[in-house]
Length: 293
Image (cartoon, rainbow, N blue to C red; front, side):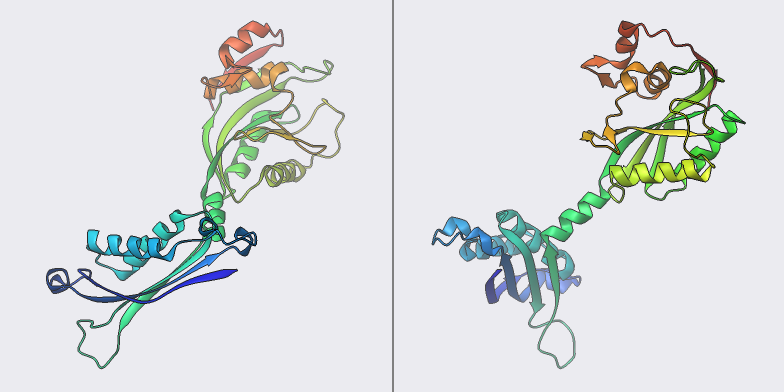
């Protein structure tokens, strides 16, 4: 890791909360550290593989002359963010700005702030804050089917990283794969999930809810107290033994397509609007609207 150092750059500016500071101005001292990834140099002497400190100084002078900041905190953050934008080679920026003659009646040399901007941390924080549209399919054929669905929805909504945006109506559907069993109640949820939960973590969370209902190893496609499928996790595509996204059964399951089309009518499947996709497929499975959620 290389550090580019700009030490004791003195500029006159008009920043501060007091009106006199904006009117009369004062001196500011800048100390900047820019950390460059060592691998960017590739053992050559090309200036394109680093950051030109003259350009950084020009940037600071422009920000200083074009703005009137109340707070040094805002000033330092603006400088750091603009330096970070200069080049993807910059891993970290440390900006220290001091008032060398502050309007304070104390015996002191300077007052100031230091701001640290770390690209990796920023990217990680943005990832955590990023919201992802996630669709879930829920079904129940054992016991109080409607109550089972409502309890499961409550458990999903209790997760602080999941926001429920829309819920479809409740539909009664005939069993699709094994016909000799009771009918199902089905719904589809449109949720928004933050970056704290990966698709695999989301799947584990949903399986935990199923386990909490007392569901054990079922006959495949047989009766179950609650079944929760992860249909879409944003635009992510995954193929693994544990999880496939989008869910591979969506296109053939009318009990998923109908409630999904209710809450996401703009959704496209195989480049066709979901409503047209359902009509074109001519699926014969019975799906009956029972009630609004």
